[in-house]
Image 1 (cartoon, protein in one colour):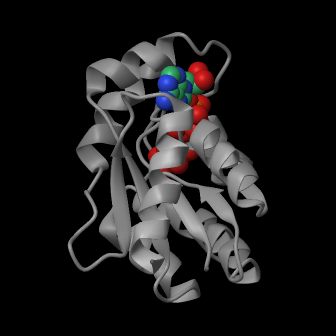
Image 2 (tube, rainbow, N blue to C red; image 1 turned 180 degrees about the horizontal axis):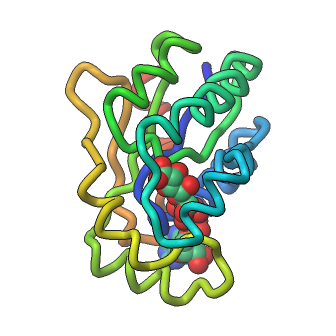
Length: 165
Ligand SMILES: Nc1ncnc2c1ncn2[C@@H]1O[C@H](COP(=O)(O)OP(=O)(O)OP(=O)(O)O)[C@@H](O)[C@H]1O
Ligand SMILES: O=C(O)[C@H](O)[C@@H](O)[C@H](O)[C@H](O)CO
């Protein structure tokens, strides 16, 4: 099984679900937040949304990690727009995605109870405006974030088995 990208807006649970899934699947985990150039972190911390130009070099680093882990690995990465996912697929054809989907209300509540993170709550609206859902021709599944992390992980593992089985 190739690598998996856990995607979604900020606060949707990518880091939490990604780490739990990697542990369950016994594969390496990486958080794309840790690959951002410091200028990107500084920009988001100021409450400014990243542009395509800001995201391009960062997505190249994400793609490099995925290519190195072509035999298995989980990456948490917002991958909000179709063209960002196309960029990642250029590193790993057929790359799989797990989209964490939730209402702005639920996600805002979670962000609010997560103090000390660089991402300000004010950027959530722009995150939702930028998000382009997975298209039918993209390899991926969508899960509702309004359930426990264990349920999300279990649901994904069951979907994998159903596919292969
Ligand atoms: N399924 C869940 N149920 C309840 N709380 C959750 C769930 N998933 C994540 N959380 C909590 O919601 C908050 C946001 O989760 P997390 O940091 O994993 O999101 P993220 O998408 O990685 O965010 P960012 O991209 O901004 O780093 C955290 O406090 C986390 O503990
Ligand atoms: O594409 C983006 O706008 C960024 O990746 C953001 O989503 C943050 O890095 C991340 O989610 C931290 O909150």
